[in-house]
Amino acid sequence: MLRSLQSICFLIQSIAPQGFNSFKIGSHMLLALLAFIPPDELKDVFKDLVRILPAELKPVVKYMKENYVVGTPSSRGRRRTIPARYPIPLWNMYEVTRTGQHRTNNISEGWHIRFSLVIGKHHPDLYSALRELQKEQADTEAQLAEWSMGRRVRAAPKKKSAVKRNKGVILVR
Image (cartoon, rainbow, N blue to C red; front, side, top):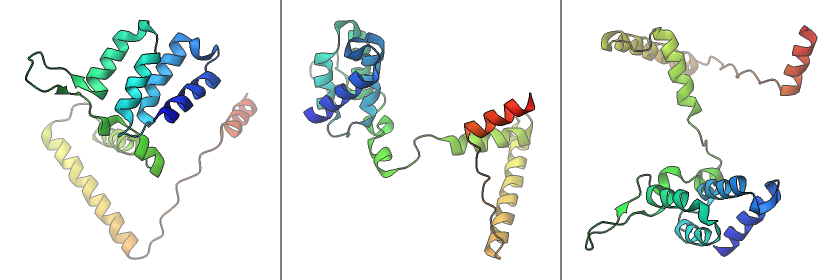
């Protein structure tokens, strides 16, 4: 645990332009890097982190503690603490990053954008949305049937690198 905190501090010292004393960059990076600490070590690392952060960050630390890490202490003495609004497994990216899974929901966002273009309305009524969903399902089933009969799937086109795109823009001028 102490090693991971030390490595985080070292990382920030090497990245931040004015070193660890750069208030905005250093402290915000430390808090953002909590997402990549193993969940079982996170509360201990957060306690150690609170000790080294500047006093100006107390409101941010309190917010993080109550909403993301520990929760809110109960106002009544006997009750347990109210759990964090956003539980650690919801926002922690350690395991996702370690296993190489997607960290974003771009796939579903792409489907939603395409579906809203198909519907052609920002707020469709229920029946037109259901009708379009049925069409989408029929298209999906037709594609599955074609693939099961041996139709080859076209590979997605490779994205051009930024250099090639920039060269293309320069040539167009």
